[in-house]
Every structure is written in structure tokens, then in C-alpha cells.
Image (cartoon, rainbow, N blue to C red; front, side, top):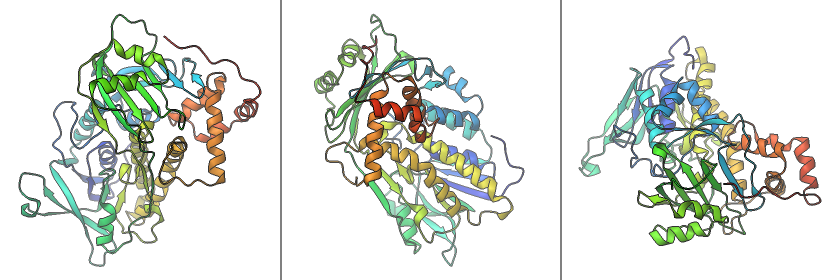
Length: 465
């Protein structure tokens, strides 16, 4: 990513040092003389899971679009990750996909080539890239407790923070840190709405759609005696008929990370016998057959805080200058769709584009311009995620209109085409990886086949090996 020719201001603060925060900090180094990254955790020196990323012990994917953006931010990062153990992958040819409503998806070579690895390795490598900049100051083991503002409350001027240590919060010293821009990337639990309220602003309206999805994960050494042609296996749930799915995902060291998921409160258990029985219930015997001879090498980790939540900060009539939010702080998805890190990368790139366009205007008007553009970026993945959750029994917060219902029904019919219509299959995977927009699914040839689905359908491919 090329750097602008001039620096807008002297100091920017980023709250939260996860993927969204790291990528935002990197972008800001092109516009600010100094960037302070405030992180609640102490970063591990090695690629290890940390408390501040509660999903770090579960499967993560940077979609192909996100990988392209990472390479733009940090040229050569793919090669560095592969040298550290990431696995090169063709996401169409190397992975077996099973949709209960339609069957196995044909595996054909594609242009969707990239890599897979654990979240700790990916974040660790990105962190090395960001911290290599002399402009970035990382302040670990500190939490932000409020915003500072100008006397008329029209602009944010910094933050209040305190150390996270063994002392009681009331006994910890509060430190004021001033800045020209504050960026909140502190995740789905971000308190920024209450911070805005404390300055006299309205809290942004929220949309929460909860399908009550939960998942459990465990690392395995795969059997060396089995004959397999796939690197990974993805079995989708099919609510309301089947609420269970699972993923066998390759990670560093030749191991598998196995995830069992259940929606509509059909949560997978975290005990040894229950985990395997749940795996046996996945709607294809291939999943359990692959798992039964594998060797578990980690505990079983569960996670259930998976509601889709969208904060509509762009709708606020009044919002302070010099404060923006992005990543999960604004839009948090059901993690089953693997969109979060890619959306964080898209948000950082959008921030870069907005700052470039500010030019000689400085930072005036940036928050409103940025939040509106970010809302449009979030709109498409939000629609895809919530459309997939639509059929879950007992889902909360879902109130689609007639047009949305028609769209959901159309997408259901596209999924039924995937085993037998190559164009639908290719387009669907490209949309999942954000290479093409969802409108690509309305290609005339796909629409025509959807209309013919109930009249002419060939048998789906047999089970892969």
C-alpha cells in the first residue's frame, strides 16, 4: 500500500489490538506521525492464544478477499506465514463441502488460492509487521475507560485509561492521553455507546439477530493410514431440519482443528463422549469416519457468544468529530460464516481511502464520511449471515419483509444447484470469499436454472474420499 505524500496530524490512538486494531494502526502510520495502540492483554512473544481473543482457540479463516488486502498492506506476508506453517490451499479443489439440502459440492481447481492457519499465527505475523514501524507505540495491559472531549463536546480529544493489574480498579491511576483522532476497534463488547452518552450524544441504535449458535473445538492429529483426497471438510447445518454441522480444518504442524456447531440452542457438549457422539450425528458419515481414528491433543473448548449485532452509528444525527469505530465494535457476525477478519481488513482499507480523500481538509467531517462508507461495506456480509440464520427455529430479532423473504428463498434454491450447475457453484464460492458481490448470484443463467430446479434435477456427486 503506497503512502500519502503528507501527514495530516501528529497523533492517533487505536483502542484494541486485535486484527481490526492492528490493521487500522498500520493504515494510520501513513497519516500520523505517531500511533498509540492500546491493548488490554500482554501480547505473547510466540503465536499463542490470548485471553483478549476468546475465539482464538477455534477455527478462523481470512477469506481470499481478506488475504488479498493483507498482501496489499504487507507485501510478502503470505510467504512468511507459509514459512511459519500455514497451509497453501485451493478453496474449491482442496476442501469438501456438504450441504444437506443439496449434497456434495464438486471440487474443481479455481482461482481461489490462498492459505489457512490458526488465528494466533495470523495475528502474530500481522503484529510483527505493524510493530516494525517506528511510528507505532504499543501500550499493553491498559484499558480505556472513557473519552476526552473539547470543552464544547464537539470533538474527541483523547482517552482516559488505566493499567490492568492486581490493584482494585478504583486504586489504579487514571491517565489522560490526548490525540488528534481516536479509533475504537475494541470488539463486540466495546463500551463506545456509553462513552458517547457521557459526552451528551445519543447511543447508536442496534440490530441484534441471535440464532443461538454454539460450537466446540478440539485439535487432532489425523490418522496417517486413511486415504483422503481433501485437506478440509465442511458440513453445513440445514435448519430447521438439521441444526448441526462441523468443520475439519488443517492447521500448522499437519494437525486438524475440529469444530462441532449447533444452532437453535442445539449446542455441542464439551465432554469426551458427548463430543464424539455429536460428531457421529453430523449429517454425513464421512465426518465421524475421519474423526474416529484421529488422536486428540488438546482440551475441548466451547463458545456461545455468537449473536449478529450491528450498531448503526452512521444513523446518528450528531456525532463527535475525531472519533470513529470499526470492526466488531460496529458489526459483529455469527462466527460460523468466517467473515470477521476479512471485514476488519475491509474496514481498515476503507479508513485508508477516506483519509486519502480528506486531503487538505484535515480530519473535519471524517467520522460521518467514514461511518457511512463502513455501513455500506458491512451491509452485504450482514445480509448473507442473517439470510443463512433465517430458518433457525427460535431465532431472535429476525423480522424480514417480503423482499428479504423472497431473497432468502432464492438463495436456498441456488444452494440446491451447487452440485450440478458449475456456474452456480463457482459464483457461490466467490461470493462466500467476497471476491464477487451477492448480486452475482442473480446472473441470468443462474436465475434460469433456479426456475427449472423443481422440474429437472440430476443426482448430486457421490461422497468424496
